[in-house]
Amino acid sequence: MTAPTTRRAPDPPVRPRGGLFRHRDFRLLWTGQAISSIGSNVTTVALPLVALAVLDATTFQVAVLTAAAWLPWLLVGLPAGAWVDRLRRRPVMIVCDLVSALLFLSVPVAAVLGVLTIGHLLAVALGGGLARVFFETADQAYLPTLLRPAEVPEGNAKLHATQSASYVVGPGLAGLIAQLAGAVTALLLDALSFLVSAACLARIRAVEPRPHCPAGPASLRREVATGIRFVARDPYLRVLTVFGAASNIGLTGYQAVLVVFLVRSAGLPPGLVGLLIGLASLGGIVGATVATSLARRVGTARALLLAALGAGPPALLIPLAGPGLRAIWLLLGGVVVSLAVAVGNVVKGSFRQMYTPQALLGRVTVSMQLLNFGTIPLAAVLAGALGTAYGPGRAIWVMTGWLALTPLILLAGPLRRRRDLPAAPQPV
Image 1 (spheres, one colour):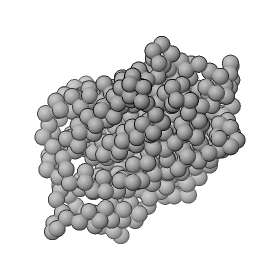
Image 2: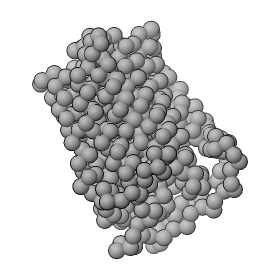
Image 3: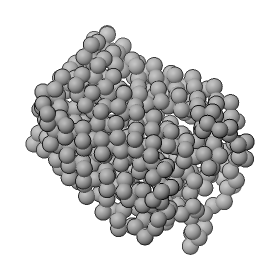
């Protein structure tokens, strides 16, 4: 397999000392995403709390809300990658932010008018997920055009560290707001965060290179197939895709019913639920911060293997959680898992961005994420069904047990024979 050749944008001048926070455009991108991530992680707790507290939803209905947010990856993931590769990425991201703001603003408006329903929440989750598909695909392809190649790992590490911090701040803030002013009010914060993100992106000055245009008549099907073939034929991208899909089944499965478990089975108040979920994500900040250094010290391939082992078996501590001092098991398991997931995401994201030809990056990203994220709605529905039939506690045991086995996938692939991941695809 010979990789398509493309021309990257010229490298910007060398940055002054002080890291990427001295880079004005990256700082704007980082600020917008930091605020938006906090808002989105408020919603991950606030939306289920709205369903439980306002609409008295069942365990299965709450799980389906999670499924609806991820279903668009299955429905439009592949064509989204081809469309994004045809467009400048920053305008796509701005439009997605504005659409998301309107969607989440509609929930408190409907609640005030007395017309809020489970169907409305499902529609918002689905629409927000659709906007997320396009935003995240464009975002992954945009970062390498904004930074020099040598800066991309640092950029990814900073963005993932901030995202991990939002997993701590967002749920805790959601629980606090829900306790003081109601869960519906917390969704206003998410709507505002998307507006701030759009404003930050609009202020970026860097001129984005014109997208690659394929020779001859454009064929969406052919462009999509090119991205799929690139992933399917590459041994590294292929095994990372299968591993990501399998691990997301376990991760999303237990997370889909965790709020129900903590509120109804453990009898914890909303404020404490948000605090516990937030604290369980503290490891993600550490993981994203140390990921680049760890990869340099032990090698990128070995860092991915260590991350997989850290995100697997320790998850079995989570279903041991309960009221009182038993909540410590959720914190211990959650911190280790979130640390390992963050390390894996930083290393894998930087590898994909630098390894994949720029003209294919959008399509390769969604080809991987179609399977990675496409399993999430299925996992959420499965966890909801298990939780309804056997209780949320047993559902969490099944999902974390699956997660504990997923490192075997990477151990069966080419990573176990290497210290570092390759810099470019090898011709076949």
